[in-house]
Structure formats: structure tokens, C-alpha cells
Length: 257
Figure 1 (cartoon, rainbow, N blue to C red):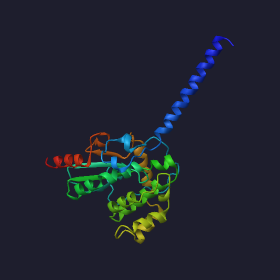
Figure 2: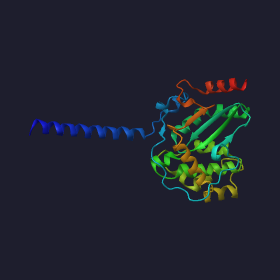
Figure 3: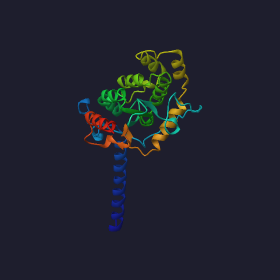
Figure 4: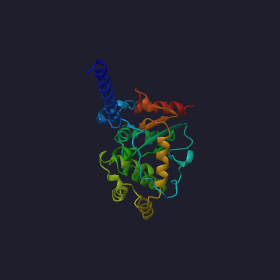
């Protein structure tokens, strides 16, 4: 074999090895890295908590019904579910997925502070629902749970049901939330939510197309993953020094004017 042929084969092997390395790296980026709750107190440690890549797989099973926004939804295309006083000087925008473990970690660490600030009228939260775990892991639990949460918004029970969904979140690889029976069972944990109207909304998938529209907005929004958390337009999830106490301090300072 000539030196030229040997060089050509060596170069081909190198290209193949490089391509395999790229594919392996891309696969790793599609996985969620989760660490124990003891380190979740620092919001900005995306590498520790784990972020689900926003441009990963999509849910191919799109709903075909009309887009029906839940009661009180606002913002562009009525895709935000608001919580808190609308006159609050600070706004927290949260993009999340009910199957996302990193979203659960964020909720566990920051929920008491967020509840305190919304309850005192100093913070309003706009929740946007995504379905990227359905695309990454397969299944429909992200969308089905989001529809149920929108049904809870119709009933004026979104905050309570939102928290219950995260408190009872199944393993990431489990699609338990695809089952309406599971979502209806969890509704019994929220006073006054388990009604015929709520059950019909969940079982008919009343807000499925709205959830799909929200998920598309997330994919097209240039976000890096869930959760994405913006305080007054600034992505605080990327702040390595962010803590619940710091979030509270910033909101209180904004409230003073």
C-alpha cells in the first residue's frame, strides 16, 4: 500500500472517530443531570441541577382541536398563567415542564419564597408550560399534565394543583402523567378541584392545542432548557450566586421603588 493510500485511510478513520465523538457528545447533552436536593438551594448551578435541552426531541402527536386558552391566561397569545397581584412591580416568568426533574428541584427550593412574595403582593409570576420531556423521553405526560393544570386554572385552583403535580412527580422515565386517572386522583389533594367540570376538561383534553402552542413558543423562543426563570426580564437561572434569599431581596428592593 502506498504512503498516500495509508494517509487517506488514516484521515478517514480520524473523521469517523470525530463524528462518533460529536454524536456521543450530543447524546449526553440530551440527558438530564440531577443532584440531591441539598445542593439545589443555589439556583444558578445549571450544571449541577441539570437542564433539559430545549432543542431536543419534539412531541410528534399534536392535538387537532381548537386552541382554547385557560381562564385568565394573558400575555402574548394568552400563553401565560398568572399568579399574584397584577400590579406587583416585579414579574417572574417561569418556563417549566411537569415531567422535568430540574423543574421540580427549582420548585422545591424556591416555592416558599415565591409563595411569600406573591402572597404579599410584591411579585407576580407568569407560568408557561412546555412539553420537552415528552419529546426527549417519549410519551405524552408533559402535555397531559399541562392540560390538567390549565383545567385547574379554569377552576381557580392552578397554584395548588401546580404544587401537587411537582410534589408527586414520577420518575423522568415514567409516563404516569399520561394517565388521566392519575391526574384526577391528584386533584383530590386540592380542596374543591375535583368537580365534574374539571374531570370533563381533563378527559376531553380541552386545552391540549393550547399546550401545544405554548410548547411551540418555548421551542422557538431561543431558551436553553427548563426551567427557564426570568426576573424582570433577566435570566436569573444563569446567576451562579442566586438563592431564595437573594431573589427575595431583589423583589423587595424593586417594591420600594
